[in-house]
Length: 428
Image (cartoon, rainbow, N blue to C red; front, side, top):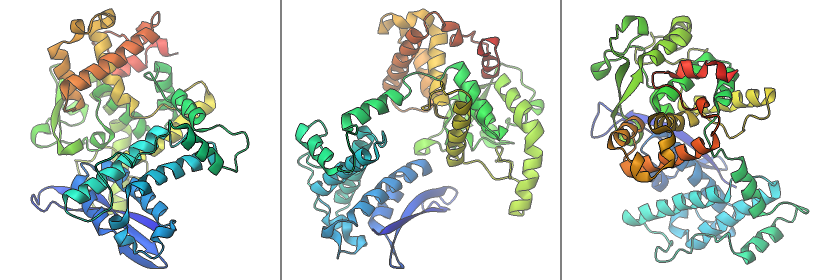
């Protein structure tokens, strides 16, 4: 099998030198020879709306190309030419092979849903090639690239291929377990507090709380400044802000899809950030940054690890996995599906429960409030207003029903901040 390296590129934007582009590129390594996968890299440069998106897409294509390199069909073909020979059957057989490997390992991951979604992304790559007039053998007239995992004959074929498994669970059983393990509701207060306590480095607890209070994505949180400029020039440590109102406006720049938006942050959430991170940890970490990089820490960077390294979304993800493991070691009842991104979904769901309370269980027309819809759209940065709103209304209804009789755990007074909410006696 040919190995494939993924490298991150960062460079000034061609049409706008004031902006920076960052995306991944793929490099194939075969017997010491390194080959840039030019067609793939052009695709990644063109469609990656964020570094996280580029990371995900490049990883999927890397998996697919490594699979192709094991097939006899491609044995004498240069990897740079794989794209011109791939057909619908190759994409379908890749899905089947991933299911076989999963059954052999008796693993719930990747789920059938993930396997199909990854194949859609591969199909999208070849669709992009067609639009750019690059050759390929993929047919776009029939859905023959997708494996039908509901077909009994295909499921039997997968079971026969996975001969190393004796009386093991099949695809359906593994998928059922996968969906049972997935979180269908928000983390409880107890789970969130346990996760926060599970972080060894307080910077990640501060980031999680700020996400709970703002619904910002990890990529946006990492850009939150120590001292803001331009439209955010009022952003600084809490003691120097001199705020009059309850809320502060903050402009999120170049978020997902290079979009910008204005959000609202409660001033007490900023105070909690100051009390628990900035006052005690920022200055010594900024000194470590200067020692490590040979220059003062820029005021645009607030969140630094204990080694003085700017926090990235990938660091947040890894530290959250470790924090969840520590929390579950203390209490196995904490769901293993809890993740950092739940904080982002927690904000709009809690907002709707606070706003409508029991009215959420009535007719949809009773909760389709234009003002509430606009608040969620602005805060979340979603493009489609109705779709976004309906999704979170449905989610809030599920949560409200699940917590009937214990609603006070989620429904709090609108003036109660994230910090007050998490530290309330009901968590103990």
